[in-house]
Image 1 (tube, rainbow, N blue to C red):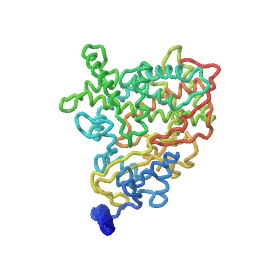
Image 2 (tube, rainbow, N blue to C red):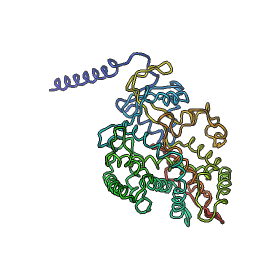
Image 3 (tube, rainbow, N blue to C red):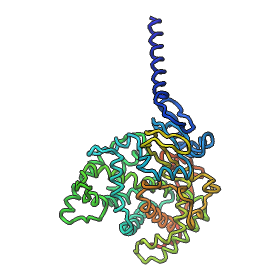
Image 4 (spheres, rainbow, N blue to C red):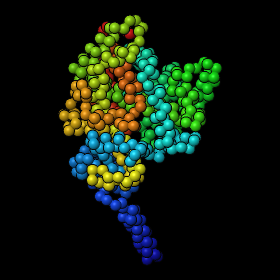
Length: 469
């Protein structure tokens, strides 16, 4: 019996070695692969990649390997895939410039599980459709109309969630603000109780989008009800074709004259509600953090915002021209986005064999670009840990070095929308309060966006005289 088990063990070991040989040698591509290591079998270096973020230093994974292997490119194994990380401005330029030529967008399969399309098309195909549609919603004349709506929602948000409180926890409030705006501008939901009910599952989903397939059947069915009613309202003239992105989706057809199905629209709205508020809520939270730590920066923002507030009559809302005057405030926000980018990076997939910086990249490999490979690199930003809004004066940073919204054809189409909601938030925040952090050395966790571990509790000090716009 012992001989039988010993033979069985030898057979199993031989099978494993044969499989590994076929996997790593028989399929080994021609050419020199980038330097690096693939880490543990199956999991590769995924745990280290994620754990540096959990410890608050996501750039460590990137910079350790840039120092060890190459400042331009290194090989790794992430999320079950062979991958190469392209670093620096040159790497960003290469990936952004070769979209749909040498590379295409790639997401883990969990994204398809979370947002299945009733048309059975891939998330890549659906993303292409969305990118064709969204520019109409984010075009300048539409954005001009959103400013007043954002100001109205911001006034209600600060009145309900901040005023008459000694302490608040910033991150949940920032999420409430950005989600409220997304609900109002995407599907015309404005009632706070409806927004709060609608938001519950999104808080579970956002952090686990890349790795944990969480279903949202309740929200999907609720959205379908809203979509059906909107169809009726549009037909009866009770809703406007331009009132929000839902109306636009219902009335837009593809090149074949085909309209989107209700479930497809529901899934796209769900994706927009997630993408349209989580990154901005992270940015708003870190603006509060840095303004608490840097009183001289706060004073500059306060001065600029109060100059604008003094020009507004009772009940007069902010407008597009007001936001164009917030130059220093936006430089401050950009420096926050540099130091704590909500989007740490993104994946692409090689759609052909190609060479980069003298190394071969096989078709099918995943490519990753990291915001921190430039944002926190002294080559591009001297004294990278120093908070310095003047970096964004004049022509600003060199091309492909400041990439909080990505770049190239896949640059976030909501970039200008995010700018508006962040500036409106800053206006109402500093106009009403000064504040201090309750936890001076609160840990930052990146999973997948940077978040203060305790949500950033702050102690509020209302201004003795507040100008109400």
